Length: 277
Image 1: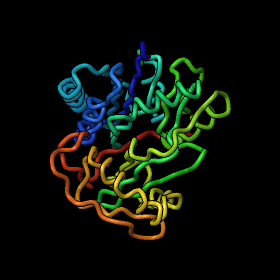
Image 2: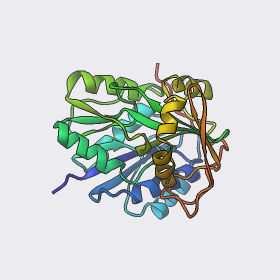
Image 3: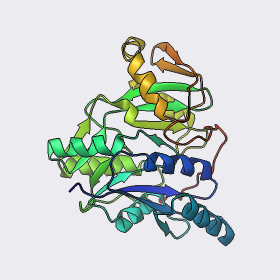
Image 4: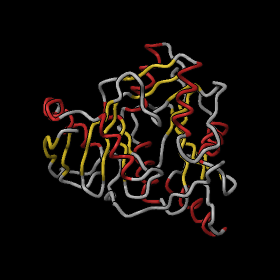
C-alpha cells in the first residue's frame, strides 16, 4: 500500500482566495492516499477573524485537519506545528499562495522510491508574476528549490523559528544529514506565484530569474509547457520569458483550470509573520 502523504499548509485570515485555489490543487491530485493539514494563525486579528477563517476552512476543506495556532508565532514555528499534527508517513510543503500540478505528489513520491531517499526536492518550477502576466521556468540544477520539499515525517529535523529563509535552513539541514534526491525535467509540477504581497518582495523574485531557462530552451519546450499550464489558474494571455528575453505567448484557455476557476488577482493579500531575533 502506498504511504499516506500529509500536505502542510500555513495560512492567515485575508488569504481566502489563495487558500481556495491551493485546496483545489490538493483535491485534484492523482495520488489518492493524501490528507491536508492546515495551520492557521491570526496575529493582530480579532477573535472573530480567527473564527471566520476556521469556518471558511471547514466549508472549503471538509476533510482537512484544521489546527489553530497561537498568534505571533514565526513561519518556521507554524510549519513545525503542521508537521506535529500530520498523520502521514510523508509530509509535503503546500504553500497557500502557490499552485500545484495534479501529478505533483505522485511524481515526487515516485522519485523518492526510485532513489530510496528520505526527502525529495524539485530542481525546477514555473514562476509566475501575476501583475505583468509573465511566466518563467526557473532551474537550479542539482541543488533543489526551497519550499518544494517532500520528506519522511519521522526525520529528526525541524524548521528554525524564522519568518524568512526558514525553508532554506531546513533544506540545508536535510541535505547535510539525510539521503535526499532532486526531481529534474518537470518544472510544471509546481507554480510559484508572485502576487504582490509575498513574504519576499518583487526584487527578490526577479533576482531568482537569473537561473531561469533561456529563450532557446523555452521555445524547444513550447508545446509541452503550453499543454501543462492548462492545469493552472493564470490571467491570460501569458507571456513566457527567458532570462534573455521573450520566448512566446500562451493564449486564453478553453475551459476551467485544474486548480480552481477563480481569477488569479494581483491584489495584495495579508502576509504578516513574526520575525524572531
